Image 1 (cartoon, rainbow, N blue to C red):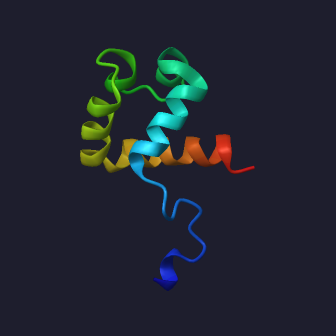
Image 2: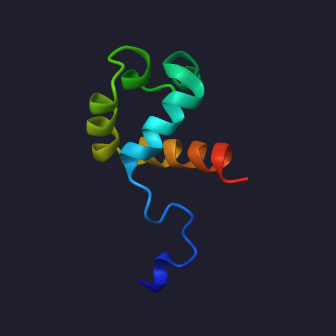
Amino acid sequence: MSEQKNNPLHGITLEKIVTDLQLHYGWEKLGSLIKIDCFNNNQSIKSSLKFLRRMDWARKKVEDLYLDTFNK
């Protein structure tokens, strides 16, 4: 548990991250910021979560964007 003490994403679900980013930016802007297919073509929270749970590199980009956007 001590590893999570300074983690700003502790307690925030991936679904909340994707939902908040989508509401803030919209799919079009989100797809231009992070160029992954689930943001540009098959636009849904469900398909995005499925992809991001399998691809650590994409999840890292989404988490970094979330922190840059909302953790100021």
